[in-house]
Amino acid sequence: MIRSSLASLARLVFPEVCPLCQSLREESPEEGFCPSCADSLPLVRPPLCVRCGLPFPAGEGENHLCGECLLSPPPFSWARALGRYETGLLDGIHRFKYRRAIRIGEGLGRLMAEIPMEGGPVLSSFDRVLPVPLHPARLRERGFNQSAVLAGAVSRRITIPLDLFSLRKIRDTKPQTSLNGAERERNVRGAFSVARPSAVEGEKILLVDDVYTTGNTLREAARALLRGGASEVAVLTAARAVPRFLGG
Ligand SMILES: [Zn+2]
Ligand SMILES: [Zn+2]
Image 1 (cartoon, rainbow, N blue to C red):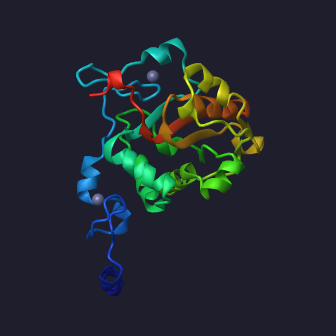
Image 2 (image 1 turned 120 degrees about the horizontal axis):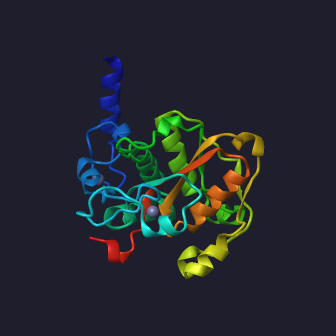
């Protein structure tokens, strides 16, 4: 009783603001975004690739494997994203990443922990949550690792330990957006290493990143973890870039 009246007093003095649209809101901060922002997120919905999570155009029937996963299966067992990298989610990630709107990242991380898996993989069966690391030079420049904020929120929500130290970025790569397909693969080759093999050996690892673009970075990070002895690596991202010919 006292606590709840203190909470409402606190809301009068420091009103809760939706981190995405900045509108005042009434529900508790745990809820994340205001209802209208939560409703307008471009969520990834089935049908999708059971392996890499690529969404197919609506009406393509059941979930199945995409062409890329058939031709060259990724090292991770599956990847899923909260939403498509467009509209409100793209804006939100940009504000989070480039303007340090940390609360947006925390809200997205909480929602990522609740992505419906529809009888598929169970997040709580994983042993630890690892963010895709930034190179130390990049970390100094940005001031924080956006993937670590997301991974922290996921780990708190599913109550699985967060591990910020076992995977390291040992090579400062060029931004993937400036490169074509083959260059992207070369650019990230050997970019990651496992700093503490004893921490990943035999572990089921949930690897967290902000955006799944071509998957080259995530494939390379997963490869490093599996070489380091992890028994399984799966991927969770806030957004998934969907090639234009598949959009709709
Ligand atoms: Zn909002
Ligand atoms: Zn796929």
